[in-house]
Image (tube, rainbow, N blue to C red):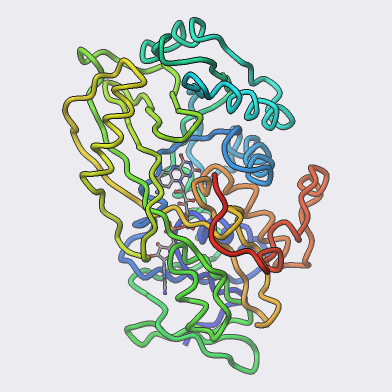
Amino acid sequence: MKRYDVLVIGGGIAGVSIGYELAADRTVGLVEMESSLAFHTTGRSAATFLESYGGRVIRLLTTASRAFMEDPPVEFTPPLLSPMPLLWIGAHGAAADVRELHAEVVEFVPDVRLLSPADAAAMSPLVREDWTELAMLEPGASEIDVAAVHAGFTAGLRARGGEIHTSSGVAQLQRTEGGWRAITATGEAFEAPIVINAAGAWCDDVALLAGVEPVGIHPLRRTVFMVSAPDNTDASGLPLVADVRGTFYVKPEGRQYLCSPADETPSLPCDARPEEIDIARAIEHINDATRLDVRHVRSSWAGLRNFVADRTPVVGFDDEAEGFFWFIGQGGYGIQISPALARVGAGLVRDGEIPTDLRARGLRSKHLGRARLAGLTGLQGH
Ligand SMILES: Cc1cc2nc3c(=O)[nH]c(=O)nc-3n(C[C@H](O)[C@H](O)[C@H](O)COP(=O)(O)OP(=O)(O)OC[C@H]3O[C@@H](n4cnc5c(N)ncnc54)[C@H](O)[C@@H]3O)c2cc1C
């Protein structure tokens, strides 16, 4: 039997980042059901840092994570971010969507600016002036080295004395006098007064093991595939191009482009796989809207983006189950918000307080607590 102050369930970015923060002053154990960490959603992302992405709380958390990403602690191997500007493009009829996005984003990202189709086409050879009515440039968008971010949190957690147990899927969660006992499928047992549910798509399954009311997670499959750059040219330095109405995005990666239909297909928690139909739909949209002229797919994968009803993470102790802490619902932003969200989570575990700098930006525990979800059904739009 292993005993810790805190037991984290899940070894994706969520689990290792909050484990790292808490290991500064607590004993931390982390259990992961797979034989390696980051096997599920964390290992399948598009690796972007986009401050204009997501709702207000997400933008607040992303912008608050930039300083850490740009100047990380010693356990991390920099650079974690590499510049990759973002062009949001709107088709004819979607200019109002671009203007609305600009108005919403400018609060946290003051250097975003609207661009004419000609100016957008001058920045990216993929942009078609005849398709585009209006564009918005986010100059400070970046590519993230996801493996380096995850490895840094993992190394830091270990350096602070944390212990990581892989191939340790929690199969039972029992209440004890002092907290919780987790028993894995292979019979290992771990005890802690505080259990952190960072199980991604499986978070409601973990809640049910503990007899806790699920939050209603929606795992949504997203597809990604790689294609060659036209004429095998080097696309480095070009911007990421994304449709403001969310039908596709195209990210330069050396002599290839990473493409996605930005799909959101409801799924059960699983080892997600791409579907031909989603790739075919993306190729149609991308060939219609851009000059990429996709003909051949080199490789593809899929992952689950996990949201609760209002598309904002749930971070906080469960009101009905003492010592059971939610750290879930990071959706499509879990890597880019990880530094700030982990500090928020650790603050709420320690004394129920949001860190001062995030409070100053307007973040409150009620924005992240599960109580806000009462009465919300289904999943809100983008
Ligand atoms: C295609 C795609 C593109 C994305 N692009 C971006 C992007 O550009 N930028 C960005 O910031 N984010 C992006 N995201 C989102 C980001 O990847 C996620 O928000 C983040 O990885 C979620 O991390 P997690 O730790 O919550 O989940 P996961 O990485 O899935 O980790 C949860 C872990 O819990 C483990 N687990 C589950 N049940 C148990 C159990 N009973 N016992 C022990 N362990 C258990 C699982 O095995 C898993 O390893 C993207 C996601 C996808 C799918």
